[in-house]
Length: 202
Image 1 (cartoon, rainbow, N blue to C red):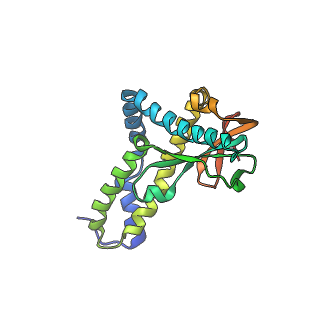
Image 2 (cartoon, helix red, strand yellow; image 1 turned 90 degrees about the vertical axis):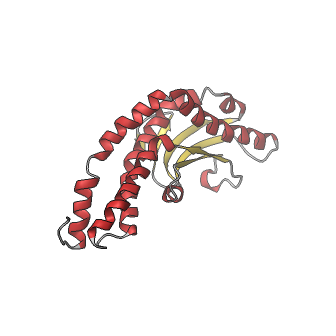
Image 3 (tube, helix red, strand yellow; image 1 turned 60 degrees about the vertical axis):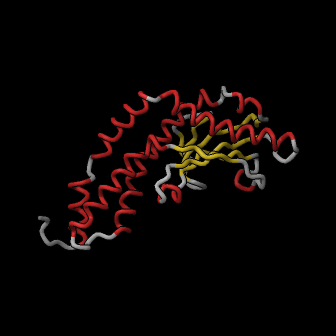
């Protein structure tokens, strides 16, 4: 039986007993699942990337898109809150966000985020033991913060796949700027430079 406590104490108890350090085991599980299904998972990213690239190539043939200069992989918070692990792949010309011709695709990163969704369901079950001190919005906030760890893992996965992506047929089919950069982060927010250099913050 959980003793009577105020909201702050209840949240701390929930975090300590049902969340703290769980991501470490999750990362082990994610790696195991990835190694067991590596080819299929890698193909899903390549397919999503090529979909956007081939769309860009088609727009260029129609005279509606200039050379691609920026490729963004963006974590979508709104999709995450609906328990969908989606990354949006946007291709921009030199105008960047001012590029008026939308060119994008979606990549499903379920293998990385499924443990977070499982954790959210578990926390929802545990919440009822705290005598209404913890509400659904608290769980949502906790999970969103926790998801940032998995988002960083997703960025590293994409970074690792960049050499293969830029050798794909779709990438070869479109016109590109000599200064092309590939970035990953949150949608139109802070991001990291993945190509041509690694590990730089923008």
